[in-house]
Image (cartoon, rainbow, N blue to C red; front, side, top):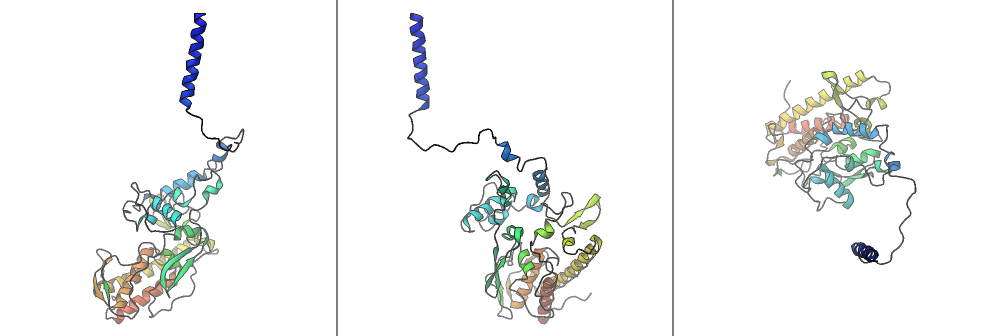
Length: 358
């Protein structure tokens, strides 16, 4: 009997302790949604993470890109930078719809898969969708109106790759203008403005501005920059346009070019592009020489020099800065870029600073 009482007492105490750990019963609530019996998480994971290696390929390409390896995020220590230079800032900008009051991240991340795609939101193929897919309204000073970019998947690119408005800006043939900041300009990413041919600095001169751009496709940037890749060195999610095979000379990725230039060969496309870029480089050099002689530009710093100058000289510098920052050396909009340079050179010549004789 003693043994029996001890046993019953132990059972009672154990039950009391278990009940005590559980805590008081909560308020009644609705029943949860029934799960899918017999289906585990793997069924969703393998929609993307499967043996076709798409995730691995895109990730490997991206890891060799400027977006991944550049210093973009390292110096983004200001609210005016984080929306394009860090992943966290871009996603906060997408969520709020504004660049006001963005948080500067403690550990800034480079642009990555999560920046551009809705990774692990639904755990379905919908996660490949872009985080900012819609048409982008560019903030440009062109006849006082905004300009819209709507070119498929490249809309995501243009959320950042657009010019900053210069405010205040000189007026063509206007009064003298004071440069108070050596970094005056349209900033680092005016590619979409150049492709559309929309900028505030179209001075008249020796060359007419074209009304169309033969290098403006319905898909915009991705047509060339994300074309069929050369390994992990160009195209695809690496997005570069040149590569060096087997340590040889720099080669142009022409797979995107050939989608439009269907009768051309890779060699003829490379030769044509090289000739264009050499021509544009020569015009840039001439304009830089004029701007240096005038005293508005410092070739050693690559920046403007503070001071008060003729309005057209400042506009010529802004055109020079914009084309330099575009970095396509003419490829993004050949006729428009050459017209901007020709007419900027003409404006400087009119001020008494002719281009160098070669």
